[in-house]
Image (cartoon, rainbow, N blue to C red; front, side, top):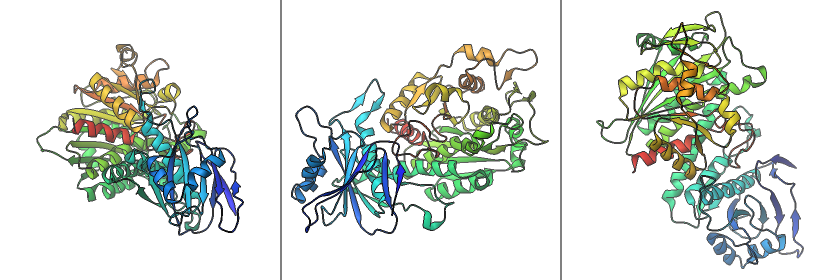
Amino acid sequence: MARSYASSYGRLMMGAALRNNNKKRMMCPVPWMHYCQVRGKCESSGIVIGLYLKEGEKDPQLSPNGEKLDDRVGGKISALVRETGMNGKLGRGRMFSNVDKEFASIVVVGLGREGIGYDAEEVLDVGMENARIAAAVGARALQYQGVQSVYVDSMEYPEQAAEGASMAVWRYNVNKRKHRRLAIPKLELYGSTDVDAWTRGLFKAESQNLARRLSDTPANQMTPSIFAQAAIDALCPCGVTVEVRTMDWIEEQALNSFLMVAKGSCEPPLILEISYRGTSPDDRPLQLMGNGLTFNSGGLCLKHKNSLHMQRGALTGAACCVAAIRAAAALSLPINVSALLPLCENMPSGMAAKPGDVITLLNGKTLCIKDTSNAGTVMLADPLIYAQTTQKPRLLVDVGAHNTGVQFGLGSSSTGLWTNSSDLWKQFRKAGSLTGDRVWRMPLWKHFKDLIEPNKTYDMCNKGRGPASSCLAAALLHSIVACADWVHLDTRGTGMLGKAGVPPYLLRDSMTGRPTRTLIQFMYQMACK
């Protein structure tokens, strides 16, 4: 019995190849943007190969590894491609069965135009992204068929093919009964000797999948203490140091802005200090800051009931930092990275912060909490000052899902970036173009700083004046950052539940884990100039 599942990209058509005793080929069309899943266990293996777009009078061409497989089976694949009218359009393909003795199922997926590279208008390496998409569509189709071993054509980009396939077949399903869980197949590289690139791709994808798991776990199963244990389990085996700071230490350091957000919840707040040393201890580290709101109800300024369930993903910043450092350790990047992750819940109660409360930060400035639902910037304020004072970092990157302004402006197309360094913006722009998970620079003008600061009774306000909520949040954080180089990433539109424009290697209505791979690529560029 078959059950159809929606996919976010492409049209997959499936067909059965000619059997030995039957000259009529059976084709099983599947509606646009649908896959078929066959229940039951399948011990067979399958393979995904690419098909380049038909251009002019030239027929669509199989990828080099696809041509080798076609030669092995006596040209059956190319004959089926011609017979079924495939044109190599990106993300569209067909599945053929009983064509080869080694592979029970062969998926041919469109790769788009051959030889395409960097597109300056899209700020994207299109060839790399096409490899991710094709590998994702094919691997997921085989997964739905119950195939346990999926071989993936390198498609000239083995690292990107590994990323797409690995992210596509991953599922957060721990809360489903075991017999209802979709099995995750084993992925293998086919037809390429560049195993190192394939392994790098798997490391990066597995790190983003870790961020997806941490973000997608329900809030009652991902409290600050559970998150801390998950970070220890993920990082300590890789040689990364994780120190868990409790309430006594937080009060001793006078991190009052963090405590103002945390005090409304019964869950005790924690701060994680993470340290990865990939080079000389004397080298100043790259400092990461991650927003670790394990649930953001909005406090007394309660968020709308229709979006409350999504607020389990408010910890996406902390999740990305843990995942990126895990990848840095797995890839042995020659760079020192530190992270400070404040973890707490923002809940309404008699102890919760009240709109209009004013606190004094470590740098002596006063901050008014006019809107308790904008808790991300408040909880990061004192930890930012503390990290700069104690770590003396070479640069500072803070990540978190803060305000809806960036979501309205950029949607899910890219992560909003604010920085005081054009050189860092160029590095992040390059990283995003290579990973397919782009970032876009937003203004950090004095205009926004003026909208959060002038007031007769306090120095700054966490809401400011005017509708540009994301720019105002960035201006607030910039006003307390003393170090020279700083980057602020707001993942509100990209890191939480995927809705519109979700790439095929991710899932709709699930947390995305973005921009983990862009953060990893940025660290690689900074380490390996």
